Length: 127
Image (cartoon, rainbow, N blue to C red):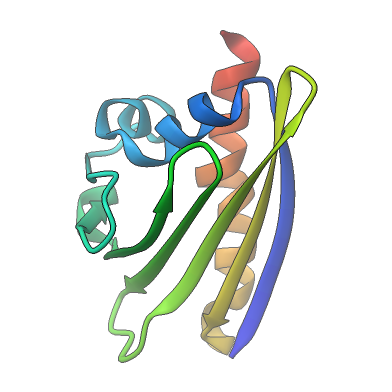
């Protein structure tokens, strides 16, 4: 199992970034795909029509989101942690993705930039 560390600067407040991580109507805007999510600890979520699904483990609005993720036929979840750090008018998003299966590492590592935090960053830059 591997770990991914990435950091993104978003042109938005920590609360706006948090909302983009947990509110389905905003997730659908930047991802272009169906999303089911509630910003509560213990709630289940489904992204990209269920390609990614799991549980919200820790929810601190405007500060932190920790999720257990499943994809494909994974037996055990990977853990995704988003830490939101105010940076003037912007927000630094610190991503840590633990327990990434070796065979999925490269596609997941690039997928964060191509399909998840990269498009979110573009959405905020364009608003």
